[in-house]
Image 1 (cartoon, rainbow over the protein chains, first blue to last red):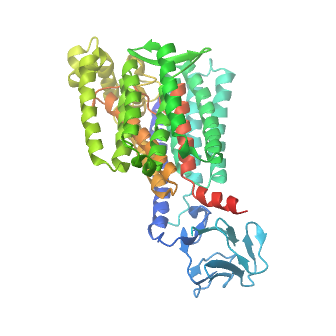
Image 2 (image 1 turned 60 degrees about the vertical axis):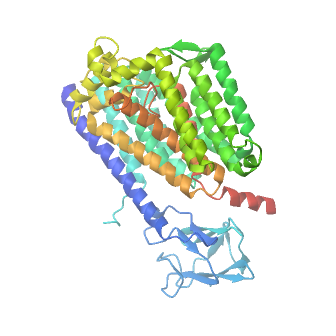
Image 3 (image 1 turned 30 degrees about the vertical axis):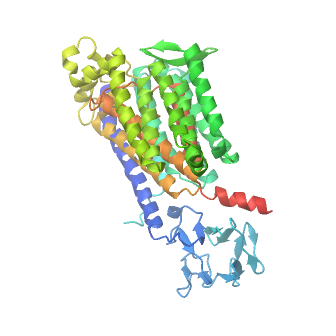
Length: 143
Length: 415
């Protein structure tokens, strides 16, 4: 009785172990793909905080910031994220004399900076968390 | 194909399935004698592992794979150890519980405290203190003095010193510019490492010498600017290997049994030949858990756990374990590449090399690819100190996988 179980189980165990390894390799593969096209020579960028595989739409791991950058669902934006909770033109980040300012463009669901809804133009500081729709970014400025 | 939903939950659930099936197998095997305690602790362990895997991505913004990989390794290990000896298996369950707790404690402590790179003297002093303690209080097992027992609690100080050494090397190379200016500055590190190695020679713990040397040489190879120094060290490494061969009997025995174990099958070569027989018996899919005879191999629960796994769960599981270690080491390298903080960068690299070298030495040893040295497989073998120190190392690696420690620091200073 036990012998039969043991023999059957050993095959199942091997299958499980290999499935486990494969699924981890797949997750790592996704991870590397996201990391490939980054230009980290730019020291000012937005970094994705969410786990990439938890989001059902395309989003990159890093978005470099320069000059004026707008974010939204529409294709005319520099940062395009097809999240249904993000407006067509959701927000823009503007550079002014070396500082970066975040401005919400009257989006339906709003933009949250460190958990508070933004009402006006706000200056961004290194380490700020920007939440739009289901996506959360970290603002990094190493200058 | 890529849109198919394989996410983080999938491997986590597979792991639970694996553990539950193992528990079920145990239940079928030993229905009458199974006490409640075993069952409860088994379920508790599965629960702890699941919960840890569940909350870790929520508290840590860093890497989520390393802990998952490690929990798979300990699951395979504990199943095998319990099958070999239920008493040791239960002890191992307790060690794993403590290990996971220590993992989280290390994670928070290392993350909270800043300035690890400035305490190089402390690491050196602590290591040498532990070495001296070992020599004074140590007990000799199988030719090497590497155990001390305090109040009934036995542990191997070298397991802790391994991590201290990585910290020491890292803080040295983080402040490399400072030391380089001093006279003979680049020899400081070499000096202290050779003091460690001299202590290990006194203890006759040559497996650990090999680990220390490998980690040191690897890190030095990457960060040392004085390239001649590396050459000297490699030369010295070879010399001390030869010296070890002539000075110590048990090294010579290991070497002879590696060249031809069949000649000494009835005494010196018994262990390694039994290990080879066990692996051969298992074949691709193994005999099935509980149906082989891993107990023929002496020390099967620590050094030779890999042969036991190969015998009963098949060489495919053995390859699986090697692959898990490969991914773990690869993750470590990636963490190191991405880390901006130089100290944690070197630490992450050191820990990955430590895991890699340690598993390579023992896998190679039991498969008779390299001479056998009695060290444990991290996370798989039975052993309290090894389990705890491996989890400490993993906790540090988890901290190293996170970003922006520097950025947050600056932010705090501004407000």
